[in-house]
Length: 332
Image (cartoon, rainbow, N blue to C red):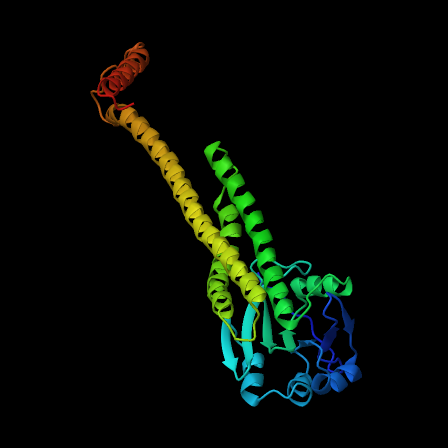
């Protein structure tokens, strides 16, 4: 279930953070004024991270970054899917990351829009993305990226690693359901499967195209160094394995669902069978009691003090006889 996005004050700035990389794994965090001064004049690698819910986001994209209108439209479009598009020397790509915000579900993915050139990186998000925070912590600790291509590879790797964390959680939960099903535990129900199949549907929908997106990104552009290409390609291969795991888990969930249906149908058939046996046994008895209960003269034993006892004995013999006949025919 997707979590609602909290309203943002209109006076808030679109700038979330900005960094000047020092080429040694660290970086200097820039404020708004320092970012505006450095973007066109500083030759150092710069990263600008924006919140595109804010009204001044176009000012940062157009006035500060100097992006063309087509690039701005690509970055700010409402509906996004993982993709790669080239505009001149830059590349626009849209990725999805796991939402680790409090109360978020695994299938509530957050989009990350990216504009990357040899020396500049712009990322835009709607909600806080944990993968971005991890990369920021690495830069602050001096253990992060040394260049823009390296920073892009770090972001991709972190996004894929977090998909892997969710995959392992779903794998463990699926294994628990399979063990419960094999142990004939009646506590397993369709709701347990739904809680797994729902995130699988969303993850398969977006991670499959994202895998292709990363594979395409790893092929170029020309300024992307070989080490970054290898890193992105490895992330794409890793994501491909996770997509295969999603497909396998979906099939396993279908098998468990079919087994649940089979068990329920078997239980229903057994109950209907027992009802049929009982009905067969009591059918001649009901006929006999109905026949002797007719309010007309000439009923046998009506005036005899032993009539009721004889009737009870007759019904017992008839009932046992019917059951013996059913047993002989192997009906039960």
